[in-house]
Length: 209
Image (cartoon, rainbow, N blue to C red; front, top):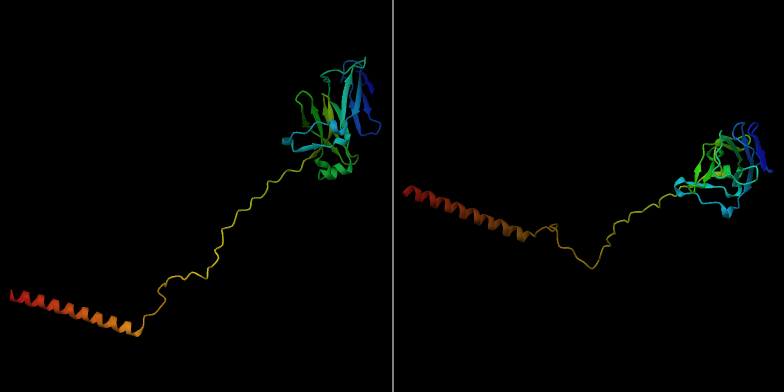
């Protein structure tokens, strides 16, 4: 816990250096104390699936402003933006696919939900920084792995299995024998001869009339 004055502002840094809060002069109108408390992993609220993010539960902290008597100031809003800086680990950077993909996440107690803050990434010092005016839970946000839709494999058409016990009908690929051919020729000649005889009879009848 560190006391902040209206005229001078101040800086609050945790003992391990994982979180730092930089408060400019004029950010508060009275003497206040800033308390930074770590939050147990089991007590960290869940992140909505729609954000496609998750919070690294190992470093979540609760930043609270208190009055001169040590009582938490409800719905505290600073007059000027205050910079919150959080240190990230190599494991978090690797898990995010690169430190540039990390962000600071802030929990909104009124809405009961996490939100992503506009974040500046310092690769050299391995820190993330955001400017805020309200305070609650803060943590390192890591992009969640998007769930890929399960590929649906279209069922193939059933393959017919040939049956050896079924004999298909003839499809015209059998040539007629020589005897059958001669019969067709004779029958054709008879039709032609009959036709000629009929034509001659009609011509004779017309001549006589």
